[in-house]
Length: 408
Image (cartoon, rainbow, N blue to C red; front, side):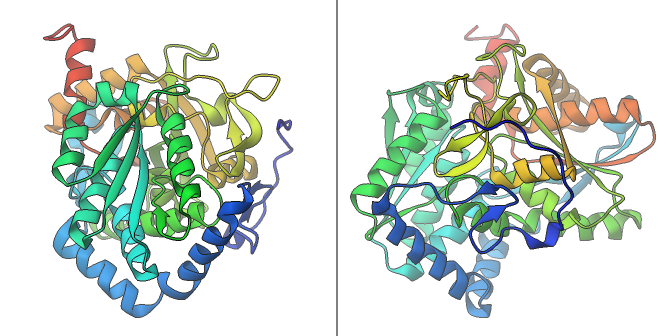
């Protein structure tokens, strides 16, 4: 299914999604009939429990004593001096399991347990969502199965081992592109075989309604904390908020608290990969077109016949050929701007951050740093808030290969 990019409008940002799970013309529910009852049950649970005081009290208690929230807001003074801006980092790399993914995994696992399901299935790309889901299921006593593309299994072996140590069953997916898209396909197949007894714990702000909304609500803690922390520390809001975008959960979690602050620019940074030829990047919003993938209408990387194209990124978490529908809406409404950063730019930004701040961001997060560097150099002196969505320990093998070290 292909549609041409529409004209930009400026709908009210407080009204999304609507009752049908639409963000403007994006979102919705495009799934086989067998999954409609399961999604209806999930919608009912979200409506009745997600914002119910007792559920929120349990979630916040676990977030405090187990995840380690609130995560720090760190000034990056030396990096700011080099790049020409005042930089602050929202440190989701300091959350338990090493990335923002745990916020969503814990919240959905608590919701799933309240629904009485027997087991959890999940997909993962870079492995952080798989680790977070496995950890949350261990914490709550739920059996867990994680699907992961065989290419990602090879390049993220430490995260595979962590999932298994947490008791998860990890399935390596050889079909399709053998990355995140194929892992989602397999997780959906598993769920469709037992939609009543199995809960699909989706890892990003993608998929059929109500998943994009549910993930956004669970990840919005990132931006809510950052907004309050930055105002307390500096007495003002940022000029720009910058986050990496694959499926888009960390970015939408950071952006959401600033959505109505007209003076704050929102910037998402996608994977520019090795270049802008099709198959060499993961820049869905900057190079894609409208279509339907994995149950939702959004921007996709597809050919003229609507066939999903292969992608590339040095970061396993940014090579998804789609993006969350809320990001597509933010693009077309003009509220957020989206750019790309190449593998080379991400590696350079990661190295600078490590050497000047003693912080090793994940390769996904390094794309946000690369985008922030460009914005700081173009707008000297501005205050820029950067989402550091995860830590880079998982990427050491890739980094050694890229830098000609052991394993190269």
